[in-house]
Length: 312
Image: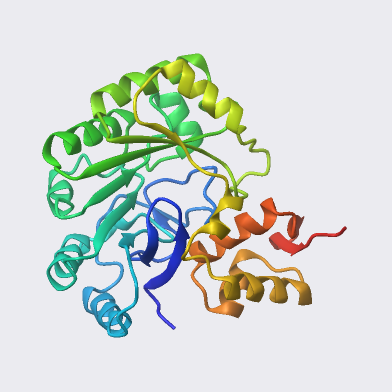
């Protein structure tokens, strides 16, 4: 069992993607209402070696000794990966040791105002930052950032990244009904996008329970209306979770293990992580598909959100 690696996870965008988690749960610069990992317990912008470099490298070399089929090493996990002060050093190690495998950074993008961090990420093949708001009001409402962050620094960091970075930038925007889908916010987001000039704009919405129970996702039709309203090139609507089972990296054994565990008794996300020894992010990928296919359902109990088999 690996502490800092997970997967390969079923990823439509990145194929066979080995996750690298450099941050303890849940250390982040944001406390987004929609986060499927849960509420942020350490809201910070302080960059530290939260997970030791040597520990990550040891696990990577052990995992790769079996010559697995991997398309991407993906820096993501249960917190904000760019908070780890050694992310650049780990990225350089990977590019030197495994040059044929691509690297991707999944980040909320809020720390990219830091020119030193931007420099550390230059070796990545793809950076996938988020931008869910373009106004202070909506930024505070949907992303609930550290007090040290502003929407202006967030957007400027992305603009500066584009000027310096030669790889691809896939900008993801997650929409929630009543949060960031007003005409005013859509117009501000379009202005920001035109400044950032990403290679791809990916529209997404909620497919897993967030930290609030009253969140409403947008339909695919509503996301398409946003796309039509913007009239921007290279906009993509993210595929629904039920398509993940068609991906080569989809592991039926993990799905079965989740179903068999839930069949014994309802479980929280943390319960499943403890019982199965599988990373929370990887479990979430399968839970989304199982819910979409009506195999499981959620119920709110005193200890939190539980998953149980769908009652037919």
